Length: 266
Image 1: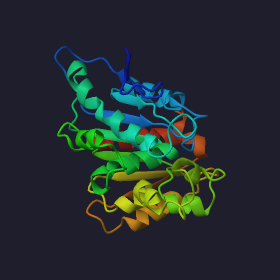
Image 2: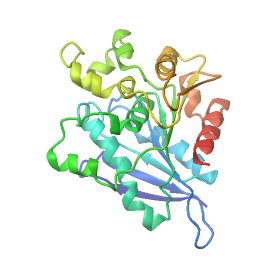
Image 3: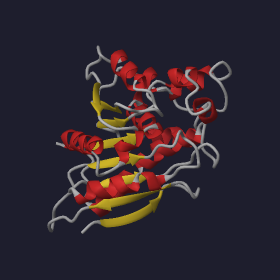
Image 4: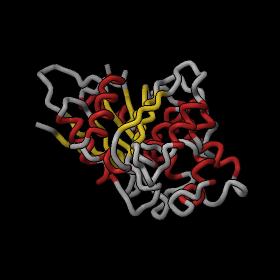
């Protein structure tokens, strides 16, 4: 039977996550955990309800999952709040590991659409400068208890932020996230773009739906091409269906993602 536990990682109403856990034998330990990061083009219209079916399904298949909510553009997020929340939300797992027998040797992110962007971006946290955070937050980020991702499954992720702005995806979603266009905030765009953190030393599966009309497949293909010479080249995986097939737990597209998550946790 799946257990659910909700925890806050900050004082804002959007700074929380819900931990979905499969049953364990007495004295056992969960072998890794998956951070589920929902999409919605970083806007407050969409929330963690998008990730809940995925986290529940993962737990039903024996995998611990942390469904992460965060501030989005329109409810206190955007620059830099959304980025601060993603790192703080992942780091919250350090406090949950003991009470819930989590093995943090393997922490994989599963992110859909804008959540794919945030998941891959977080995997490159050690390669980016601080996001203009207060000094106290910088110390937290550098703390030995910070939780590092060991792999990512991106589901039609917006992995090329410059390309997203150029294509005006979702009516200026990238500029809306970062407070304005790249011409006004070039450093913000550089820090926020997963392309800037390449090459990564952790595996990334860039899964993309063949018939995706919301996030063009070029978002994943461009990222994979740019990282091809790195120590752990990202891999492009094409699956059938549209943008939302990836978060339909009954679909082939989603099952492929779950299999890849399992591969990264082994």
